[in-house]
Amino acid sequence: MLEPYLLSICAFLGGLGVTALVYRLGRKDGQTSVAVMLLAGVALTALASAAVGLFTYLADDATLRTLTFWNLGSLNGASYQRLWPLLLIASGVSLWLPRRAKALNALLLGESEARHLGIDVERLKRELVFCTALGVGAAVAAAGLIGFVGLVVPHLVRQVSGPDHRVLLPASLLAGASLLLFADLIARMALAPAELPIGIVTAFLGAPFFLYLLVRGRP
Image (cartoon, one colour):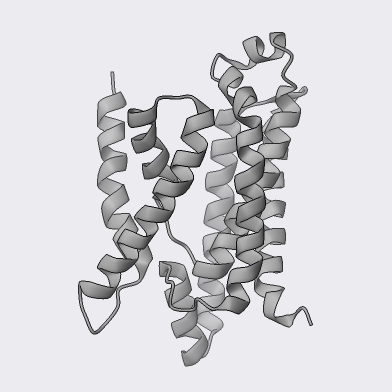
């Protein structure tokens, strides 16, 4: 009964476990260090990449092709069987995040200021970690690794709508979906009748923008 959804369940549990480990490594004396979390994330990403490399080495030809396309990201495997769990999770995340918009706005002032405004900062972080693991795990299970959407879209939307999360969150949701559809259209048309993995398209779009952000933010 659960067999069609095992991939989504395992992706969520794996994402939640790794995210919780990163969060735990970043905490000390009741406080969370973003720098330590980033370094822990880099280390665990390298470990996960090594594990994927091992599975790639051990895979047969058919599994190797599937694994390669999953690594590059693709919507080819879309089906109603995969859509329903993703739709339920995406709807839950989309409804929950805007409810925390005011708390996220307060957090923009800094953790200390947010606490003075009555925000339970550590609880908010835990909720965000869980929500992120849930949404990302389900998306990766359905479509593979499609990078840079979460980096490019919020920054572009913020330039237009401003930093208010009451507008930024729903606008980023719609803009992210639009960017994914646009990238999928390019992937299907660029080398027709062949189809590029969509992760390659989003990387070509997102990497230059990421470099632009680095250069612009440099003192």
